[in-house]
Amino acid sequence: MNQKVKKSLRRQFISRILLLLIIISIVSGAIQSYILYLKINEDSKQQAFLMAHSIEQGINETDLASKNIEHQIDLKLELHAKRIGDRLQGRQLADITSGDLVKLRDEIGVTGITIIAAHANDYVNMRSTDPKDVGFGWKKVSPEAVASYEVILKDGKIPADKVSYSANGIFTLFSAQSGSHTDKPQFFKYSYYHAPNTDYIINAYIESSEVYNFIQKVGTDTWIRNVLKENQYAKEIAILDPRVFADPSLGEKMYPPLKQVVNGEYLLRSDKDSAFLKQTTNQKPVETTYIEKINGHSLYKMFLPMDEGRVIYIALDYKKLSAPLYKYSFILITSGFISLLALFMLTANFFNKIYRNIQQIIIQIKKLESGDLTAKSSVTDGGGELSDLSDSTNKMANTLNQLLTDTHEKATKTDRLSVLLENEANQSVEKVFTMSMETTSNARDSIEEIYVFLSQVEEQLQSQSDNPKAKVILDKMDMMRSMADQRVHTTTEMTITLSDLFKSLHGQSSELSELSNSLLNQLAKFKLAR
Image (cartoon, rainbow, N blue to C red; front, side, top):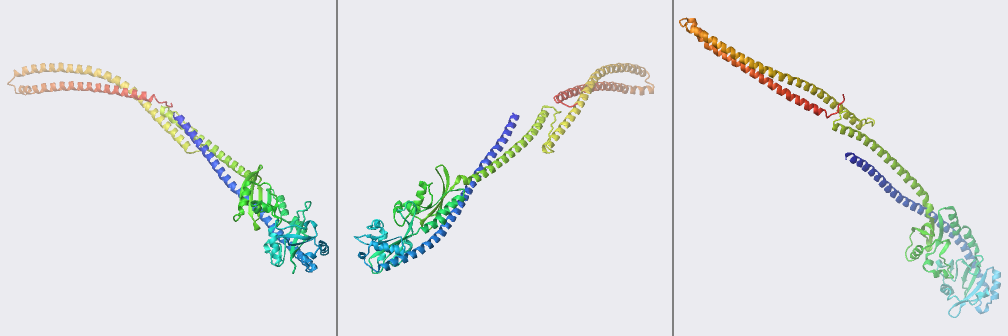
């Protein structure tokens, strides 16, 4: 039963150590996973920030350069529009023909000229170098354009934030892509000028593809392509306009031309993205990041607000980004687990060694308990406490063995002597009893003879009553009888006492023999070294 309990204690110890090992592994793994998750998100965010700021810097630099170029075109186009107005010399609309406009176009070097005037509650292209433009009405297509025409007809000024260039009676639009050139993108600058003392608007436009070509070389799309090429983690980068996501009809307007994807590519889109982009139009946009799976790709998405309501969208390959960190974490967790396992094996082996040594001492003590004083234990733990305990137990067993061996020898000797004493006492009792009887009988016979002798002497002395010496002797006769009786009595008592003494000695020797036998029987239960 005790052995079973001890084994259960060993199993309990090992199971607890193993359980502690598992708990430490799980807890440390969970903590490392959480820290790893935070680290991956931090690195992903940092990567996205670096790319976003790089793109934003490129956009700002490109915008600044393109605005400078476009401003030069605006000034050039303003001169062209005013020259056209001067050449028309304030002629009324009825005096201007399309042929006149063609000559002015070729002379001044513009791409085209259109005369716009009010007609039937609308503003219509009345004359143009392009016959297809004649009769085009603006009211249905662009009410904002109609409002702008009314302002400059009164020599007013269009707000500068809505157009590329603005002055009293004139404004120039931003470069816009031509919808009729589908093979190769072509961009035009349109200027609207109201010449003094006229009731019409001169629309002169020139091709401005140099702005487009500049942007193609060093613009936002180029920056995005370079970032995608240089960064192995980037999947998609784009400049988005949340207004078009919220109101798709804005993408159908002629001016200003709006697109959902201003620059870059946005193919890995989701409903969550659309909901976020629509939401940004109703509140102040904030930086937003989240992890999402689309088409088998695990993506880390970032939406970073820019000026003019635009948003930089960046999608990183979350799996590729996190793979090195997960690899390092796996190595760290594995090495930690191996270290804990080695510690467990070392602890278990150390405990088993202690347990085996303790078992040896327990077995020795149990043998000592059963009476085997020859039992020894051999514990070698490098001179530790268990070794000292084993040595002390062995010394105790040796001491007990020596003590009981000496006791056994003395008990054996005592038993032998008690047997001899008992035999001799038994013989002495018989001899003393016989001698006592003989002595008593002899003493009685002697006293009777003495009494007879004294009686005879007394008779003789009584006959000599006149002899003084006879009287003295007679007086001593009684004393002699008394002394003789006393001596007989004393002898009898002495023999009786001596007989009782030997009887007592015989009984005590018999009892001592029984005690020595009992002690030898008790000692026989012990196994002693001889």
